[in-house]
Length: 124
Image (cartoon, rainbow, N blue to C red; front, side, top):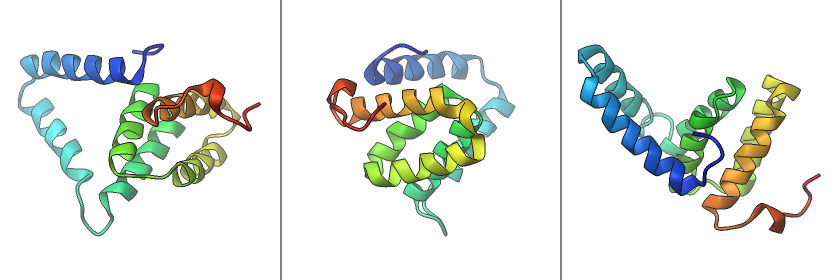
């Protein structure tokens, strides 16, 4: 699902989730339910949990997961400054191999903010 806009990503993810759930047995449905529950408000806020999910996905270099958590971070009103700090932690933990994923993450974030990457300053 790479190379698409964030809107296309979200539509394709939803469509494919419906396909998966059409085949899903109890184990897959339970995992899906657990995944949804773990990000709910608790001792940690939902936005903190989404940032944690983002960093874990970034370090594991899963672009689809990064995009999903970027969408959720945007919905949870994470600021660009908070996002940059979280991804900086991921960069330090994950090392230089995560740099291509960092590029794609900021491109996706720019789309979510309604900006185009060529409008961004300080990229090099």
